[in-house]
Amino acid sequence: MKTLRRLIYGEVLIAVSFVALSFLALFFFFDFVDELQAVGKNNGQYQLKHALTFVLLLVPSHLYELLPISVLIGTIFVMARLAQSSEFTILRTSGLGPTLALRNLMGLGLAFVLLTFAVGDYLSPLCDRYGQLLKSRYMGQITVGQTGAWLRERQPERSYAVNVTTLTPDGNPSGIRIFEFNAEGQWVALTKADVGLIANDNAWELHKVERDELLRDKSNSTLNRSYRDSWNWPTSITSEMVSVALLKPDRMGTIDLFQYIRHLSANGQSTQRFEIEFWKKVFYPLSCLVMVVLALPFAYLHFRSGNIASHVFGGVLAGISFFLLNNVFSYVGNINSWAPWFAAAAPGLLYSMASLAAFGWLVLRQ
Image 1 (cartoon, rainbow, N blue to C red):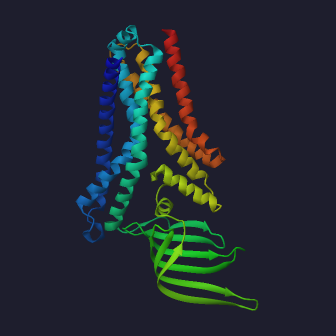
Image 2 (image 1 turned 120 degrees about the vertical axis):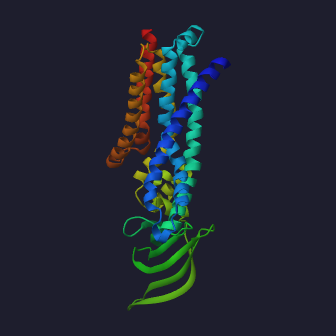
Image 3 (image 1 turned 45 degrees about the vertical axis):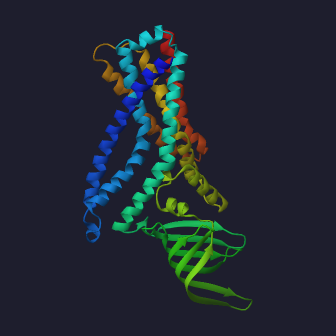
C-alpha cells in the first residue's frame, strides 16, 4: 500500500505543482506589467525594484486563491491519465477498491488543506501588509473612499466614533478624528490628531492633538479648545482592525478577523459581511478536499484516444463553477441575511454530494 500511495501521491504532487507554478507565473507577469505603469511616479521614488518586490509579495495571495483549482486540475489530469493508460484498472485488480481510493486521496487532500490554511492565514496576510506598506512608502499613504475608515467603540461611561483618514508608511493611523459621546448619546468632545502610534497596552499615543470639549452645566454650555503635543487615548482598537477597515477583510488572518467581529458586535455594529468572510476563511481550505473528491470519478471513466482533453476541460469548468457559486452565495447570503456559516459552506456541501454521487454511480455501473 505504501508503494501505491507513493505512486499516486507523487504523480498528483508533481501535476499540482506544475499547474500552480504555471498560474503563478501568468499572474506574476500580468501584475508586473500592470505595476510598470506606476514606476517613476511620485518624483521617481517608486522604482523598478520596488515594483518587482511588490509583485513578489502578491504571490502568496495568488497561491492561496489558486491552490484549490490547481489541486483540481492536477488531480483530474493524473486520474484521467491513469485511466487512459489502464494503470488505474491494474491498481483496482490489485486491491484498490473505491473506499480505499477515496481514503487515499482524502489523505492527500488534507495535506493540501493544511498548506492552504498556512498560506492564507499566516504567509499571505503578512506579505500583503508588507506590500501595502512598501507601496505607501514610495507612492503615498493608504486610504479608502473620501473620508477614510470609520470605527466605533463603547467604553463603560463613553462611546466613540473614530475616523482614520489614512495609514502612514509605517502602518500607523493618520488624520485621526475621535468623536466622543456620553452615556445619553450626547456629543461631548472632538479630538483631532495628525498621527497615532498604536501601543501594546490598549492605548493610542496621539501626536499634535487638538481637542474641543463641550462643558455642560445647569445654566449654559461652554466649548473649550485645547492643544497638546501628545495624548494617550485608551482603546481596544488594534492596528489589524484599522487595516481591515481600510483594506480588504479577506486579507486578514482567521483569528484577527474573529477578533474584529467581536469588536464590531460589542459596539453594536453589523457583522454579517465579516462573519461570512470569517466562515469563508474557515471553509476555503476544505475546498481542496472537495476538489480531490470531484477529481476521483475521472479515474473510473473509459477514455478513448484523444478524449482525455475534453474530460479534463469539463472538470476544470466544474471547478470554476464551484468558485463562482462560492462568491454568489456570499453576496446572496449577505443580502438575505442567511446564517454566515451556511452561506460559506453550502457550495462545498453541494459539490461534495454531487461528486460522491457521481463516484458512487460510476462504481456501481462498473
